[in-house]
Image 1 (cartoon, rainbow, N blue to C red):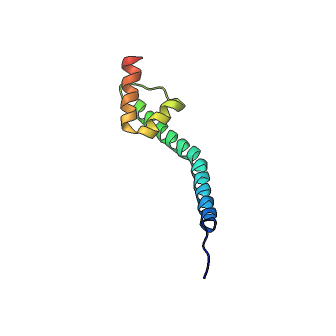
Image 2 (cartoon, rainbow, N blue to C red; image 1 turned 60 degrees about the horizontal axis):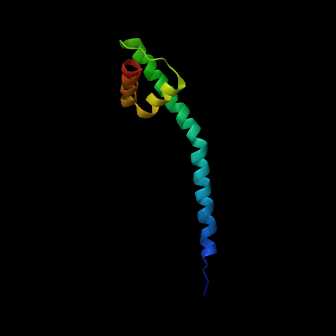
Image 3 (tube, helix red, strand yellow; image 1 turned 45 degrees about the vertical axis):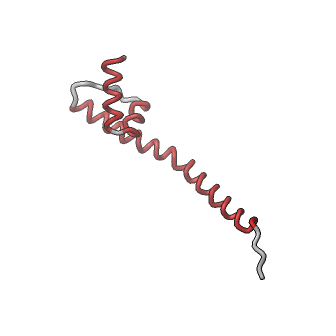
Length: 83
């Protein structure tokens, strides 16, 4: 009869969790950079077409890249009417 201990399963499970956390930590900057570039393109197109203009900064690009069109609308309202 084989004796199963909790240590036999805890080591591999902890190792897998650590690897998954490290993968998430490494992929986060790439995700932010990708969304910022998408936001910059959206802001450029909006500035090219629209009546209002929004200065293209990293923070503005990040807001638009992460939130999408609602972020663009909120940023437009904030910068043109409240600031």
